[in-house]
Length: 348
Image (cartoon, rainbow, N blue to C red; front, side, top):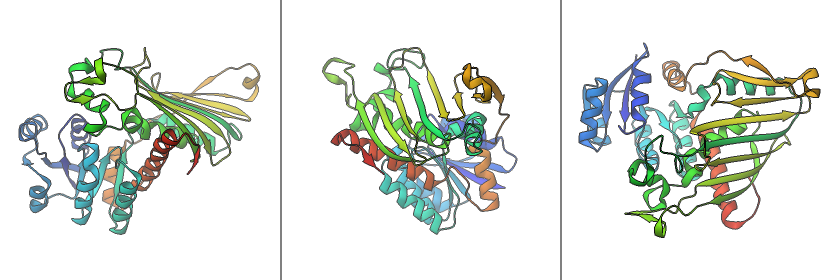
């Protein structure tokens, strides 16, 4: 039985509490958060007996094997390093760290300690992207030539998640002073993983353009200076020789949270649209390449990251998505920021 502590009880923590508590091989034994009021409410909602006001108190107790680290992004590094030093396995929310140097330090540390370290790249839970990678690797669409990937949100336009103008949960994501790296820092790791994992090849070079749009008078609402990027466009080359376009925005009017991928090869093409289905993809191959006909493929189901983490801890061996994978992706994002700042194409 894996005894789990949830560190951080904010917006995403509920998903962790529910997913881990539903597993036969896992028991959520405690939660920790500096927000005592939020912590108490979280404990009551999810039936968690023990609560700790900070990581020091939790580690002093020590009655847990693993931690779901759901703290704010800038806190991932210092808290995870403490947990590794204490011999705890870690399942960390994305991004692993706010820069590649910190992420690689975390990956090096957890590997040296022989502990399980995984990152919740949640769209790996979609069987469609898993099957896409398999089909590409098997050569089903021939040699990959072009990749198109997008992550489309529109909460700066529509109010289906609430009005961002008076909601701190959204406002901090628009302000660099509050720890935000914009849409690239928020969902960039998802789309970079999606676009490289699904295409079965790593990104080799990138040219990136970031844009911040005027959204309020004086580009400010209260204490929040609205200076973080709203849209990101990456022109990339892959190690397999393909090229591609990867983009993300919060101004994709008409889309709530759409992640999509198209991989074009010399003998066929694959497209994944998670707005349409997480368990089905479409393929154009054989004679259909002459008529542009697409056919669906049922991809079944795959184990979630939560299930795979508990299994990995039980077996004592890390599986993907690992800290190392997340660090490599953070390097891509760091390179995007550098490319935008310098106006240069950069080889990783």
